[in-house]
Image (cartoon, rainbow, N blue to C red; front, side, top):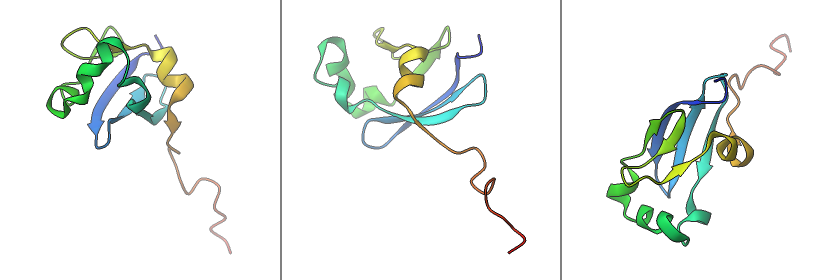
Length: 90
C-alpha cells in the first residue's frame, strides 16, 4: 500500500526516521508513548534500537507496533527538497 513504511531507523532521544512508500519522510517521536502499557519496554535504548518493519508497520520484537496511519498523523515531515522554493536567480 502507498502508506506502508519502507524504511525505519532509530534516532537518539526515542525518535525514529521513517520513509513511506509514497515518498514522504519524517521523524516520529515515541517519548509520549513510553509511559503506557507495552511501550514501556521501549525505554531500554538497546531494545528501542531493534525497531523494524512488518507488514508495512513499525515494529519491535515483542510485538509493539505503530500503525502507518499514526505515523503519518503525528510525524514531523522532512522537506524532500529544501531548495525547492529558493529562487536561484537572485
